[in-house]
Image 1 (tube, helix red, strand yellow):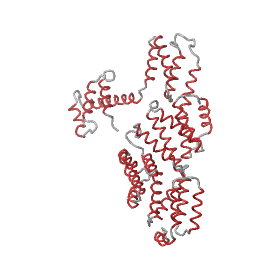
Image 2 (image 1 turned 90 degrees about the horizontal axis):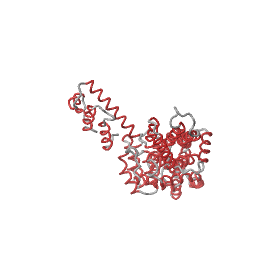
Image 3 (image 1 turned 45 degrees about the vertical axis):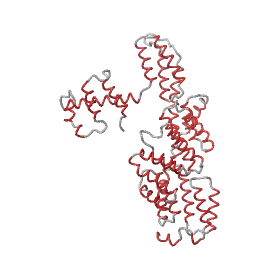
Image 4 (image 1 turned 90 degrees about the vertical axis):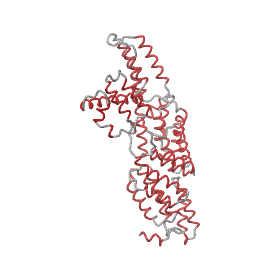
Length: 480
């Protein structure tokens, strides 16, 4: 990643400011480097070229010192850029008033800060810590060295410290509960209960931070999909209704939890959450927050394409792929683009083209869920196209499932269920009675991903004469 042109201009002002840098040669060095940014061709960056083109450098050792100083200044600039906080700066001013013995200024600013702190709609743990710092300054009094009597009760200091602790812990416990659900990583019950008690005590609080992380926590904690959906809707309402009050990174994070909830329930066969997922993505696109550091998350890209195809949004998904493929991280771009293209070709029943794309993508060994997506789609293509390679696809899926069962948490039973029924469907020896039994079992099952496809294929097989069914024994015998 490079600094934007706006950041480069601000860095230039920073380096030239005598408050931060009193060495003019360092500023000249920066100007030279900036003129070659961001390409930095080798011939212009040699020690000899730098000493020749930057006025005031006396030798190699001096150049090294100037470069080190420029690096220090750049680090200071980046720290200020990423930690700029108006409240923190004003608390610094408050402390300065105390040192300068300006009680009226101190009291006026302290009163103003307390009011503004309380009025802020989104109070994350950083904000809560600043509130605690303010109360500390007020508790200590204007001049604790001269005035020993307490000017304020300690209650506010303790209250803001505890609130900071619980607010920060809520963020971590919300994610821990999410990992417990997805990966099976157990979290202590007392931590969950502490957060439930905290949220109950603040149920009337209008803080948007609690609206986000409280609902994220409860949504992931709740085992019942119907009850969890209540917290999903509350979280979505907070994000969609108040994006102007919530930092962009927090909106992205909340949307990530919403997306995961949608993917989880759509994998269990609840189709309405496919549309919910697309709605969240369209919201992110409208707010220009789909990308993070100018890149799109590869798994998100895959999930969006899969959901849009299941909703038959063919034109929309083609435009989405075309628009965002270039934002995939370079090391994943080919795999995820080819999977997406394979999904579109499969939807259009262009099985040969789909298989070719998936063959390119199938070498990805890093993303377990990516592997399942490729292998499941190959099973469906193999079945629908009467592909002689179907048996090898089945074996590949089985091995991938066996190898990764313990790593995929609650997704394992769903993927196992699909595999079990697919084997029954693809059995070339099955007769009509066995297919009727399969159909009745599928109809009795709770919803899960691709249940509809299995039912559709089973019905289709039942209507076919036995002699014309795919995967006759003589064909599969070739692979045994």
